[in-house]
Image (cartoon, rainbow, N blue to C red; front, side, top):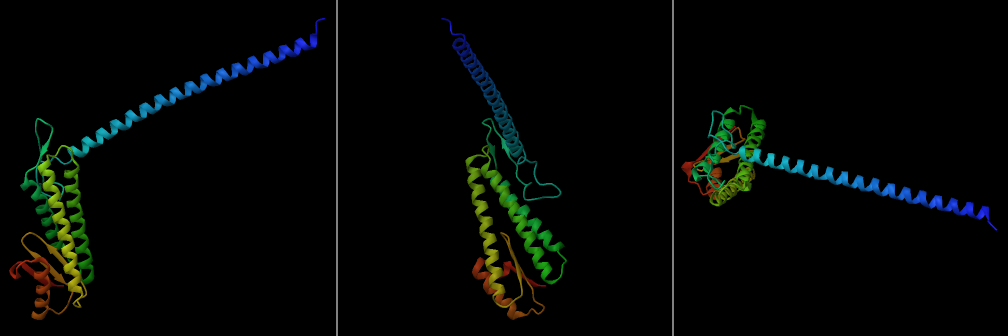
Length: 232
């Protein structure tokens, strides 16, 4: 005998199974499509990022190719780089040395233009020197990290960067030693030719000069004739 209730229940169950299968399939297709779109979007994003990196790298490389010093020189505008057939940038030792020369010139000018009184003079002088030295170090880092720079120039840039850091450390040592002698403050500026020392003291006599010269000659190994001392 035909059981209508049983068959109806079976039909309902089959219908539910079919609906569940259909829903699962639709979810699968939606997820698959979503994944494909995400993957595509991600690929486009990667390509965009890569393009931006290449553009930024080109800008960074182009930024260090200059005609030479201009009217207003900075530590980042003194090197000439020439690109050869192998896409390698070649820098002469003289051009690399110009970076330090320009930096020292800028410091000298800033010290001459510093008309502040007493402690403000020394604070501003130290800030000016530190900023210019940091620019010089950044300039050498740009050359060192540029893949288009030839290996010899890279080594020279590393050597000159180390030299700048050593000079900075030496300046701080001399300043601290001078202050340890009882002076309120001091600013020291060292170039290849001279050591410039300014002390904060209203009175300044031969005894002061002797004490400062002893420190400067010992720490810098410059001769007395190459050490210039003044007070503020």
